Length: 367
Image 1 (spheres, rainbow, N blue to C red):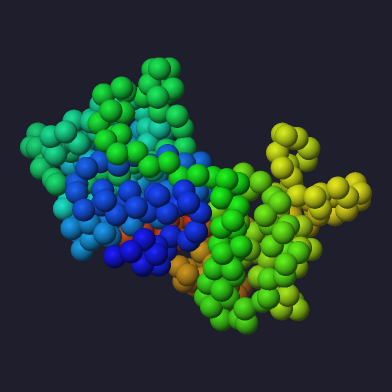
Image 2: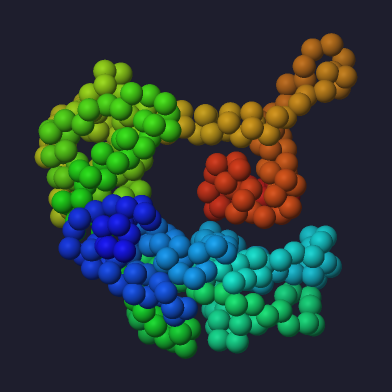
């Protein structure tokens, strides 16, 4: 398989030299079981490369599980990774498999590994080295065969020096290291990425694909993209969703690009930002209203998807009882957790919210 064929098959977009070199390394290491550590800023696509490693390996037919170590509270991270026995702690009403056991014979992608607490790092190292672990509350060792791919946006060498990351775990993980360049260092790929996101979102939304103008391309290339590919994808999808005339010009993106309000002035901000205070205020207001609209639509979708039914018999007036939004949201989360048998990652996907948001809501509603 050629590099281009590999990129097309596994959704890696870009013709920059750095990307081609990364793909070449991935194709070499994927066929083994060696641990891989992926460096890259948030939003650069670390999970895409992790999935490609899994899919190109002999484990391709098995589970690929992605865990955001920074999104799971320290108190329950160990249980999420290794599982627990019924009664091992307050709230442990059933036996539960952890991600290591679920991913047996497959690949476990530990994203944001630099945010993992030191206490959990000790148990993770033992599990990686011995392929065995103890569930919380269990006296029996569970054996697994799991490949580890980890990722971080932190300099782990500095974290080791600062005593925030274990040196032995660091050396165990960095058998092979991949460094994904930020989008600002591969601006030649911005047009291809933007066109891909436009076509993909249009097809998914079943709408006509709008035309991307040359001035829009130049505008996108002049922006520094601190949020990298994730920020570009969000900006493009928002622009397509709000478009009315089938043409995406620079103006379509000006109101959606993250304005830093003068902070970090050394950044290469778009030339279009040199506008009057009234224009900037209007754009900031527009952005705030857009974010509010997204939040409202997300909440509405959660409620609709969970089919929350209101019992007319509970009201004395023969009309539907009006329940607070918080109660509806709580019921939606409970239903999702019930349907996924407590699997928070799947529940978050079902609710179409982030794992971090789900954990915060579970704590907020004491679920």
